[in-house]
Amino acid sequence: MTQDPLRVTIAEITRLMNTGEPVTFVDASNDMAWGSLKVKLPGAIRVPVDLTDQHFATLPRDRRLIAYCT
View (tube, rainbow, N blue to C red):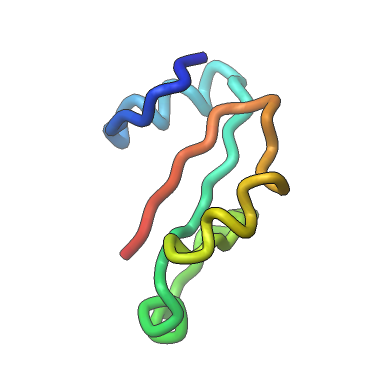
């Protein structure tokens, strides 16, 4: 697993999920964006980007993290 952040495509995420690689999605949306979302990704961990430092220790280390925001 790489330690450097990188961009992934939907196809790459689909491949990871289809091969059974454990992934966790991290929703980095700010409060305004989060409040206006009509659909939220089930099971995603919410860590607003401006609070990453406060939540860093709670993020899983045994899997690939895929951060996204709207």
